Image (cartoon, rainbow, N blue to C red):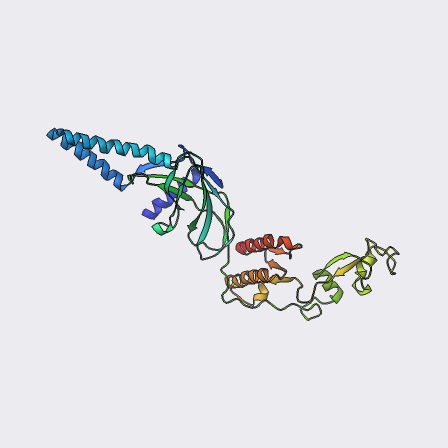
Length: 339
């Protein structure tokens, strides 16, 4: 029954929150309620007041009104301790399945007052004090902190609700807010450990090549092409493209450069791009095969081996530029997460 009402409560909050990767806290999204100590203080004040009225204790009146005044003052101070803070979610790298994810959140104090003892945590799944991230901010200060999320299954997930709260200054009240980031989390398959060796490079003339495919066609598919330059050997000329262009089968003009003549830009041996597939893993279990593919993707990326990825729903070609390697890695991890 408790879990049922907690789920209904979270759904209600999610339905009324607008997703955004940056939020500024103000009086309309900061809430305050008494905690256990606050209710006990209210009961103590009520008992002191009744006792003072019954026995006409002047010192009892003094103590009662001092405690009540301090409690009411803590409401204003506690609420202002959270107001004026901006929370911004930094871009999150993909994470492995079955492990907790750590979000990077930048907290900025936009006021001229100090902000004390603010706790950030996930609103779902984690409740222990060890899961809280504490931060205090000077006026105008920005601090980036990490917030741990519970372990998630493979896939593309909505970022869980983030809660910020404080009990400053007297610990009698709980001042809190709930924030729904808009970014999604990419959770790729758990990596195989130990990692299997990369599959051997396929030979274009081996039995694995398609029937009727020549060595020249295989190299055209694997290697890039470029314009002819003086000194290029004739055997590297892509004669099929020359024939398609309707050129005579003789050497290029005296200028040594004709934009319609192209040659194969052969990659050094052992550095030809690889295309990873589920069949290459040799595993019947889909999750284990994806774990092996994911481990190969990281291994190839770390060793500088150009690679592509072929999955049932998508095919990703090797990157065409060295500067695209990180974006290519993320694209492959997203495809593995959604497979």
